[in-house]
Length: 178
Image (cartoon, rainbow, N blue to C red; front, side):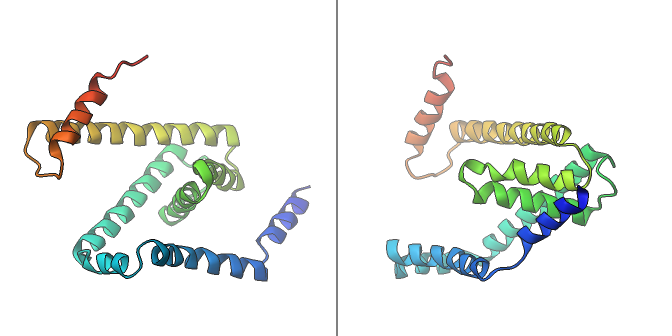
């Protein structure tokens, strides 16, 4: 039974010419869409974006992915076999990219559960771990957004249409929670 599942899985991963075509289309789609919607003006705006800020954003993303991978290793606590930082980072990146690449993010949890199941971690426990991970992310972003709301309301941020942003934030805070 196990060898049949392994064989079927390897057949799914076998490279086919259609895979190359799909990858090429996926890489060309943003370029075609950019040219269609904004053309040269959009590319000029990209060129004007500060390189230092782009590098800082990439560094921050890499740091956060590594922190999430460490958190996953802590939550698994050796129950999914020996999992190093590199392996945990691979699982983290695969599940986050699948989350972003599928409609409604439905591929993220499925990918995480599949990768953990391959390591011998039961899917029910993997789903619980995913929910705890999402709860930790939600708590972090809730705290950060609350701080940004307070900062926006109590200081002069020099945002375009700042009063509109402040009134929207006040409206959200006092919206009836039915």
